[in-house]
Every structure is written in C-alpha cells, then in structure tokens.
Image (tube, rainbow, N blue to C red; front, side):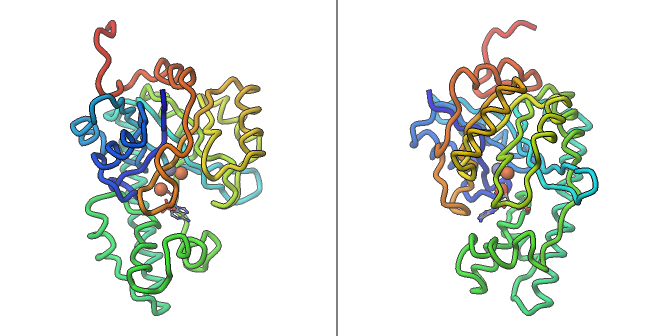
Length: 291
Ligand code: AMP
Ligand code: FE
Ligand code: FE
Ligand code: ZN
C-alpha cells in the first residue's frame, strides 16, 4: 500500500485541480492520497466527486501557524490536520481569518514590489488564483510571467525570501492553539516538515515536546526538504514522544519540482492515523461504522 499524506491543489497554491491531483496520484501508483490545501477545505467536495476508482482520499489541510519562542521572534510552522469536522465553528473561523490575513499580506508584498518597479498587479494575481487561497507561489508565478525572475524557485530565493525587504509576515495561528482546535474538531494534528531549514528558522526539540503536550499526534519525518540526519532526528523524537510518523511529498503540481509520491507513509502509521480521526471519514466513506 502506497500512501502520500500531504498534497496541494489549485484550491490553494498547487497547480493541479483536485481531480487532476488525484489522477496523478493514482497514475503514480498511490493507494491513498491526503488533500491538504493551505487553510481551506474547499477542495474536499471535488476530491470526493472525482476520486479515481481504487484510490482512498483522506480529507485534510495544512494550517498556517507560528511558534513563539521566549525572547525571540515567532517561527513559522505548518500544522497538517486530517479527518477533522469541516464545520467545527472555531476551526472554520480560524481558517477564514487566515485566508483574510493572506489577502492583506499578499497585497502588501505586491504593492511593495510594484513600488520598486516590478510589474506585478495584485488584482490580476487574485484573479489568476481563481478563488484559490493566495500565497507567495501565486506572486512568484506573476514575477516569472512578467520576466522579473526565471522561475518560481528563483523568486523564492530572491524577492520573496523571508529575509527579502519585500517580505511581509502573516499573523498565523499560535501552533498550540491550532493543535487544540484540530483536536476539538476531532482531527489528527501532525507537525509538517518541522526541520526544513531552507524555509527559515526551525523550532527546537523543546517546542516539539510542548506541541506533543498540547495534543500533537504525529511528526512528518520523511519530507523532500528533510535530509537524512533531520529525518533520523525527527524519527527519534517521534519515538520518545510516542507520536505517529508520516512521510509525504508536499506535492504542489508544477509550482515545485517534487513529484507526487516522492515520500510515503508506512501502512501501520496510516492505520493509526485513521483510528485517531473522528471528525470526518476518508472517501469513500467507511461502511458500517458503529454510531
Ligand atoms: P506563503 O504560505 O504565502 O508564505 O508561501 C509559502 C508557500 O510557498 C509554502 O506552501 C511552500 O510550499 C511554498 N514554497 C516555499 N518555497 C518554495 C519554492 N522554492 N518553490 C515553490 N514553492 C515554494
Ligand atoms: Fe504551499
Ligand atoms: Fe508546508
Ligand atoms: Zn504543504
């Protein structure tokens, strides 16, 4: 059984529609795909409708969060969440707040770029996102199309880098609150790419221990942005803290070079994740679940 628990469609900052993404997953030999768009469940319905035969879809998302270290600026962290109730009021409100936050922040980044003479227009970027949750990858594509940079990757390495003068942070959810919200909604919170240093500062072991204390249930260990030492460290922590271990591609279609199924999750860990999620069921829904 081949299982990829972290993918993005055009409902957020990937380039495949949910239907295309699932077809790509099936073509790559996957048996299970989790759809984890940023801060939204808007792709779940299409995923359920367009699910290829033989593929199980785990509904999920990736919540934009922050860890607040003592005496240092907040660190951006991503929290994967699976099988939560999509209508849980507090979690739903927090997703909506984050999407609004993304719009304000994206507009500020683009205004600063435009002021510096780069020909990018916020309204056009929002329109091109087609209702999808806007992120820096959308701005990156506009910069590529305007001929300012040669690739999305180049945009992230320069103008959109978190240390670029054009970068604007967003007021993401305190990760301890995010974990509590996901659990309250019956979901399974998993810390995404926790040691991916190329994305910026990463948290220390004490932060991961605090997240576990707050109800975190898993660590994404096998991820394209983790090197072998980082994977080994995360696997060790998962053992100490008794957390699930996942592996995933973090596929974004052509916005990144990573193919779907680049990393995968072991079946026993997947089964444990399914058993822990009570707010939603995978597609197709399980038959005969008591209660
Ligand atoms: P944002 O959420 O707007 O801060 O943008 C961060 C998103 O950009 C994350 O979802 C990453 O997956 C994506 N990202 C980060 N670095 C790159 C890169 N080099 N190429 C393409 N996408 C990236
Ligand atoms: Fe993304
Ligand atoms: Fe992420
Ligand atoms: Zn992701």
